[in-house]
Length: 308
Image 1: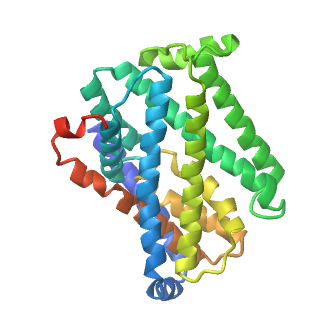
Image 2 (image 1 turned 120 degrees about the vertical axis):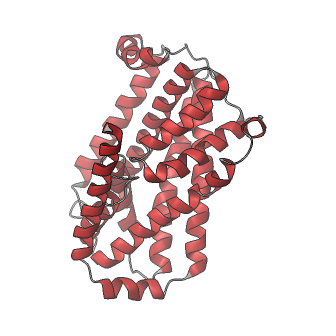
């Protein structure tokens, strides 16, 4: 009953924010843009979201290996897609993590390490978007645009370094941080000392690529609708929006994504209706990217769990 009430509350948050945003935009302008859409660019946006899901599977597999857990390739991909599909009606990306973690733990019998790998995956994802944020506001966004560039860049870079230090401590690389890190990971089964730190670096590069792809998807969506906005504008908007939608206060980020994107777009000279259309397109792209999960959920778990 409590879980149902939580879902209903998040749905209400999503609907309330969407209703507020819609009341502030010109629906005529929005539909006029939508009618003139270039479908090849929109199809490419959908393809980008499928590619991003595959990159998430690669990142998770790298981090699981970094923690000493070998995940079969097919099982990892299947769990990510099914989790994304199920997560369309769950809070932010946390619901998706729960689904994919349950699927893999059931197959491997290593619930503790699977949970630890999901925590590491979430932290590295945060590092990836924070690095993109630091790059955007440190080099591409002027201080008079959106948010103070130097403050945002410094905070994002500092947060990234703090999380990486925590993960290094969990792996025994920084003994002074090991006790703090183990408080996080011990309930999840502990963490083994790792001999391949390059896996962590590679996973961070993949995380950065994933969030750069989201920014590219926003720029492509804008181009498809004929919206005049530079790639720099989307660099200022998308990373902040991604961080906001990670909060588990809505249904898969709906409403929060639209509200934040419309608010930030104003500082970039982008009309509210245009920003809303791009935001909804990104949400639709996320749904399209999860559709392989509907097919994979129907396949035999034994067949899908075979490693490549």
